[in-house]
Length: 187
Image 1: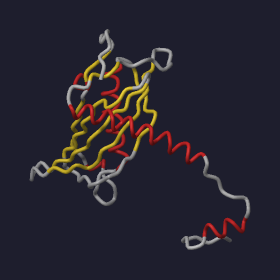
Image 2: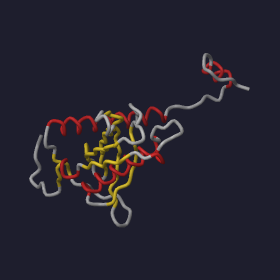
Image 3: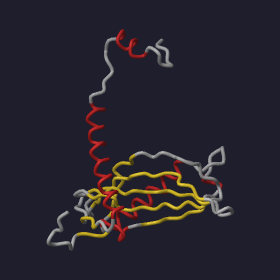
Image 4: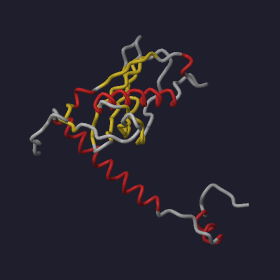
């Protein structure tokens, strides 16, 4: 890894690391008594913004969210901590990794409920994309996260190219063949 001569426009990962902790209250729950996924997405978006804006020194917007898998339910009364760090930087975008952990404050049991990756774009005062500072990777975890984020970005680009090729045939007989064995009826 080479070090640029001028590191003045670089920031460490730890500079913008952000943790938000919030108590899960009854108004956040669904009919089953579990916390709404939408509430968690909103909290993740909030922590991603703070982390990205701290690194970029500018307003940031969410460009995409990669894989939100809910691994464990979160109950009313639990504390939820959302830990965010910049995992990757491009020219005007950053990928923020978020780890969500719930804690039952009565039993002290903690659960990793999900991990997600938000792509954020830095904007200037005219709402135009603006270059973000480079990233100083301070340890092996930061290097691993950067490489993994770059790989996910490449896979996402490949996925977009592949899905652009998907089309539904115009031939009704071919459609019927493609739907054989599926749980649907054509009427």
